[in-house]
Image 1 (tube, rainbow, N blue to C red):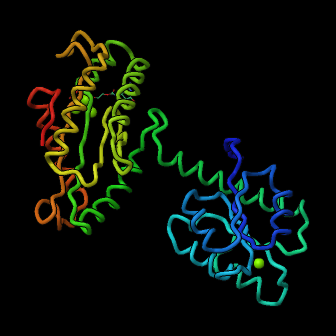
Image 2 (image 1 turned 30 degrees about the vertical axis):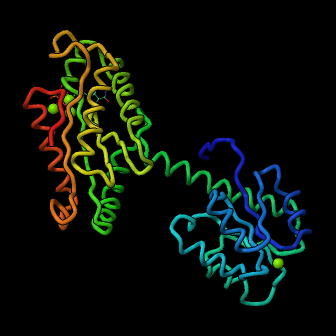
Image 3 (image 1 turned 135 degrees about the vertical axis):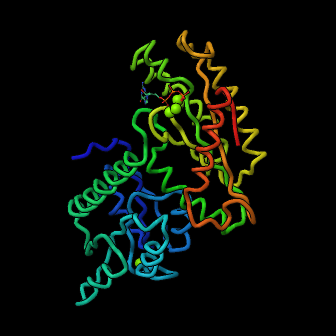
Length: 306
Ligand code: GH3
Ligand code: MG
Ligand code: MG
Ligand code: MG
Ligand code: MG
């Protein structure tokens, strides 16, 4: 079994019946942190504030029905994976199917048996937390904690689409540590790994917007996606970054050109109405950034090229 961390799960109970809410709270307060909503409107606000790990949903609510609430949650990408467990006293034939048709994970029949409720909720929470952990691991570079290549590839497609739709610029930058082979040869691979980690940390910290992405592209190479960032904006950010890596003062191998470890950067941008704005090749902007990186290397390293 996958070991998930032991922070309590966040459970949202949506029910207008106070006695049901009290019973559920009693059954579940050891399993998770519990929030309540007494109607759908309030529930949607609370879900938006923070996505719960699991939702317990009453079939009959004062505003809109529970089945409709579930359908809505399942059609929105951000909430579709939250397991929804119905609470119902409806035992009529065909109702069970209706519940699963709208995407419910399970349903619990009233009167509530606290131990059965707790066991069912625990099972779904275990699945949910394991899936979340796997997703995180699948998208993270384990050595540096940055996004990995898979995340970069996925995000690039999404952000390119968005940039073209919203007519916004988008910058892609590739970053490569200078003469890193010499570093490894002189200090050894363990020190090399530490150097990559130090640089990765600085690169991650240089991201200013929540939509910016810093990824480990492979080996000692990194890649940025900077949405809504044009050529001039990118040049400012990347020039500052170049200096800040130098100022980490990581001693380089004596054979290297500079005393301290430096990076080379190449970048390119999608420009509305111009460059790559209608390009069917999503990798064109990456290829151009790679070409610019090659220029930085050719022209002496420790520089930014466009
Ligand atoms: P330049 O990029 O300036 O042209 O020179 P370089 O020496 O950095 O050239 P290159 O990109 O060809 O070599 C990269 C080296 O980085 C080779 C490889 O051994 C080392 N490297 C790649 N990944 C890792 C890693 O995870 N850990 C360590 N320690 N070294 C790595
Ligand atoms: Mg009700
Ligand atoms: Mg390289
Ligand atoms: Mg190289
Ligand atoms: Mg290199």
